[in-house]
Image (cartoon, rainbow, N blue to C red; front, side):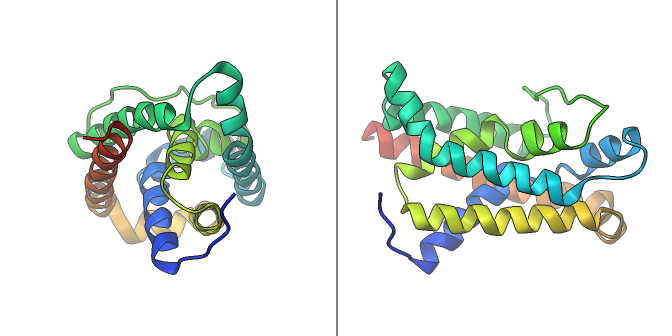
Length: 191
């Protein structure tokens, strides 16, 4: 494990995870979950659970892959395809695939699959192939703090951003994610 801290690298990883988690783009889904849960969200609990899921997968995901005979490079290539399709969804406004979210709870649909979903977990292992572990850990914590504040102050953000602002942010982070997907693919295939 490499615990060398690099501020620029940490900021890169933070932006990548922010784009993949897409908490701002998920505001309409979160509002729907909030309404079906009776108007309240368990912001702290959902954030804490997603943090635990991401950190555990960051450290144990590689062992799980080794157990089934897949290298981190192979997983990174697969992850680049997942990121590519998530980015296309964000940029083009189409729906290729989205985990169905149950309407009855707040922690399960928020922490998993919305925040720490398949795209996020794939990204974490893909990032391990390219960035230092400490940078990824700090980026996870920063993103979970952002997630907490978005969940806590959802009503304020909804008013401030409006529908147009949320759409613009989604497109911008979609392009960043698309570039990352291409870079991960090139790096791990040697192209």
